[in-house]
Image 1 (tube, rainbow, N blue to C red):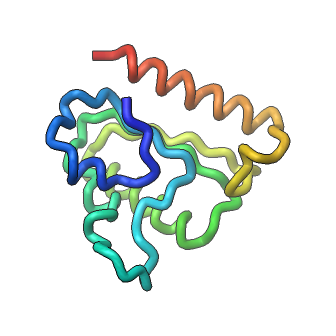
Image 2 (cartoon, helix red, strand yellow):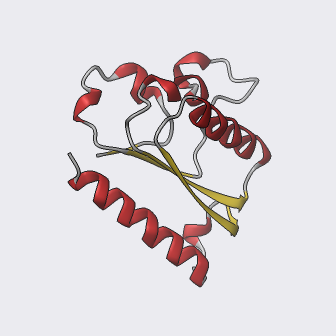
Length: 125
């Protein structure tokens, strides 16, 4: 099981067949527009179709930084267009960094669901 905050994994790991799933928690799925690095290497939107059958989970928060939210939406769209395996869990009332604040029932329930997903993916195969 791999839990990554980004997707260079898909481009860099030749043994992706060993991975049973990948989960992201309100991630940065693409480089910012002014980022001077190798943007294509960290572009999850472009890479999501590379392994469409690999189970993927995306946990999103409602009060997200605009750039992050925009790229997360593009990632979901690209995954749907590629018919990729993707489950999306939204916490509409949570803010980026919610896990360092007191949890409300909605956040706790969604995180519990995400952990159930990760456990099930790890046991599958």
